[in-house]
Image 1 (cartoon, helix red, strand yellow):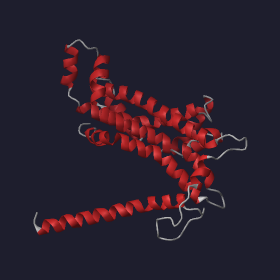
Image 2 (image 1 turned 90 degrees about the vertical axis):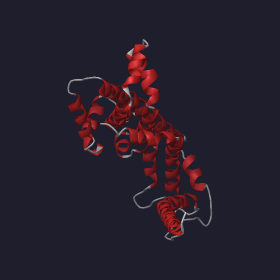
Image 3 (image 1 turned 120 degrees about the horizontal axis):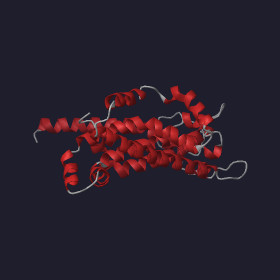
Image 4 (image 1 turned 45 degrees about the vertical axis):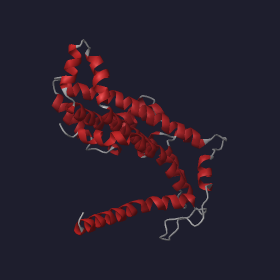
Amino acid sequence: MNRPSRLKMAAIHAGLTLLCMATLYPVLWVVKMALSPTDGLALTANPFPETVTLEHFRQVLSGTDAAGRWVFGRQLLASIVVAGATTLVGLTLAVSAAYALSRFRIPGKEGGMQALLVTQMFPATLMMVPIYSILQKLHLLDSLTGLVLVYATTALPFCIWNLKGYFDTLPRELEEAAVMDGASTFQVFVRVVLPLARPALAVTALFSFMTAWNEFILAATLLNDPARFTLPVALQRFVGEHKVEWGKFAAGALIVSAPVMALFFALQKHLVGGLTAGGVKG
């Protein structure tokens, strides 16, 4: 490698290093607030804590309500149930709908796909009133079941589009060969298509999980019992009218972010293929 090329590579690496530092700076600030003994917002530029303590994490994890119940445990369980059920329901409905739209001739298929795409133009808050009214009539207000139905419904259009795009890239010859060997349509779908679609399934499952795990506005509106709050809603109790408990808020934010980060690391080998292949063919 000649000298101009080495200088160019060094400049690229220096630029990427600066970009990473700028990106990680806010994250380090959150870690600093979570590990600092004080509960205020430090105004120094230093992103590293001078004194390290885990007291904020202990207070967040061991919090109880007036009845002595372990609130964080209940809220963690509620988040896991809601996110897990949303992923299961959304993925089950999306994968079957996407395969049917990709492989079969259905009257009005193009119009249906466009209608699904149009629904993504409107934010969930715009549908708050009809959602609230529907859940009220179904007696599902302040219920995790109602929240799962809302989350799965709002995530379904993206999941169907993503999976359909990936199914379109899979060669039909593999399915035709399986049919020639005597496999039924269901067996082809389960034994041939789904194993090949693992990257897209991983991306879709991660999106559904993140949608349910991180969502705040709908959960705060539809849930009233603190024991049923999901973790993002629970973080709101650290933000008061006259005071913000920054240390506990930062510690809670890191705890809430941990499961999503773990899923990213676990599914990272599938993410690139699932995100790119789905856009090859509409």
